[in-house]
Image (tube, rainbow over all chains, first blue to last red; front, side, top):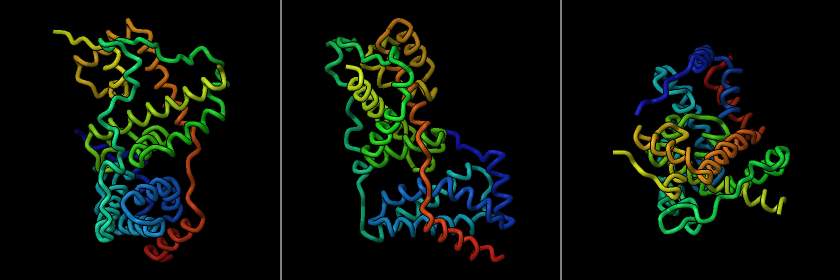
Length: 210
Length: 80
């Protein structure tokens, strides 16, 4: 599987960082830190330690900037530094978090209610179809609130994968590399997360349009 | 030999399908199935719309306190 390479924008940003451009640094800090903080928090015991890990990762990134060759996107590269520091720190705290706790223990189960299908696997109850509903209802602020809550209630790794992929628009390769996941796990986590968010949207739209 | 997929299988392949991550024969089996299945087409379109809606969520912001700390760290690394 191919590693996502740096974009022109990445290389330009790195040049600015190398010339000590404070604005460039704060630009990328503002963009990435909220996600970095949550990812760090998966592996360590408190918000305070997660903040330290984030700071350490940024400093490590700045100090290692000379070694950045653009073989990975800049955000993937800084997340790799972060995840390594966070895992080491978690081990030192003797806080070993099982993958199932982060990823959810339902990864092998079907995402769709098996009762919706007959014995042969064909729909016996057709899925709820919201496509005929008024646009302003489907895409309204309330729906977005429902989606935000649905994501917040996912197991941490599912939540992070859907945030990076669908809120922030990262590619599957970037997310897999950044979070140190296999290609398959990245996709399973994303599919499960999306299925739950879709189900939450369905429940919401059913309730407003009985 | 062509692959025959049922609805229960197709709904589990939607994310891989949208990522264009399926082997060619499975991808074409999904497309053949979708062409003749309203239920699965509904699910596919609703996934697409869910993804688009998720992309409309507000991006989170860093706390001012943490921003200050990181700015100070940068200035320590790159003294003016």
